[in-house]
Amino acid sequence: MSQLASLPKVILGSASFGVFWVLAVFPSVPFLPIGRTAGALLSAALMILFHVINPDDAYASIDLPILGLLFATMVVGGYLKQAGMFAHLGRLLAWRCRPGGRDLLCRVCVVTALASALFTNDTCCVVLTEFVLQLAADRKLPAKPFLLALATSANIGSSATPIGNPQNLVIAFSSKISFVGFLLGVLPAMLAGMAVNMVLLLCMYWKDLAPGDMAAGNSKEMEMEDVVVVEEGSGLPSPPSTLVATGAGEEDDQESSISTKHRWFMECTERRRRVFLKSFAYVATAGMVVAYMMGLNMSWTAITTAVALVVADFRDAERCLGKVSYSLLVFFSGMFVTVSGFNKTGLPGAIWNVVAPYSRIDHVSGVTVLSLIILLLSNLASNVPTVLLMGDEVAASAATISEAAVRRSWLLLAWVSTVAGNLSLLGSAANLIVCEQARRAPRNAHDLTFWSHVVFGAPSTLLVTAVGIPLIGILNTA
Image 1 (tube, rainbow, N blue to C red):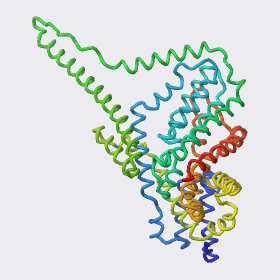
Image 2: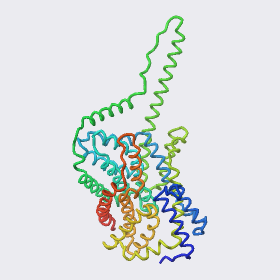
Image 3: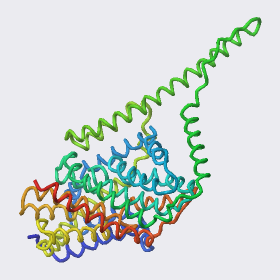
């Protein structure tokens, strides 16, 4: 039984966590418009200032393996973007796509879900939003169904692996579940959830996605293909022919020939270098995934892959390292300290003690209650803090049932907290990224509002969650 700390510690710790929650959910509140990252640091500082947590415990609460894996994943993602990986995903969406928007919508759902499992949901939303908007515009189709498909499929797909989203990273490191074990435990639920989500989208927007005037779209696709061919095939002049010079200008012509050959050699060398780096990025990433499946340490595997790509690039790494979201790493550091301090007040444990008897995962009613609690907290406090607050408590409760129940409880937490992000626009960063990217898009911009998202997100979340829970329970009983 968790014991409450002293009343001043509970009040001050709760107030500090309240500051974190307000600025995480509403980063631009008028009375303190400092943003999420600074809000997390402020909350962490308040926890120490109010003696809710001491400095040594605060530093110890920062999970360096998770931060290392996040950092390395962003570096690897940067090199994959340079190698054209995400451009290939975009082309895959348009390749031999049938008239209308139904085939395209299904492709967006499948490609986004599978890509998010390997490259994180946020990354896929950043790189695919504008491309999806362009495809919709070319086919004279509404943008809304495709934006919803992109955001919801990214969240659902990211549930399948520990590297798909930040909360899964926390769960993988806390539970010690291997990469393969995590994948096999959640993948069937992810595939079923992706299918249900796709069917719901088709049912809701079937008429809007009917085939229309495709002339402009086909013309645009042909134009895009021509651009791709030019980009991939151009840039190198053909080797210069030998210049035959006579008379007084022979020496000048010779020097000109040498200069031309030198430029051609340098351009040829640069092209070979780009081909090598592109191939190496794909091979290194494949090796990283294989290492994950072999059970090697995920954090150091990703860091080693990132360092290998930096060395192979053989240039100052500042350009690539500069694209890392350091503000996200700082946000996580502050969040770790804040959540650890809040846990020391004893309040989360005391609340859990009240609901724990009704949330046992060996009963259907208990699983239902637990899932609803996770759904609610994930949308109120965000999914990563929810996992940090509830993870150990849920696992400890499951340990009284069986060892298999502990594993099942962690995977259930991963599934529900991730899918919960689809409930509302504020449920996950992926939703907000799609919303902002679409609003700022240079072509076919669209304002995805809170209520237009909820109309689809709420029923989708409840159905997808309900479909996946039994599969996780059945496949993780032993």
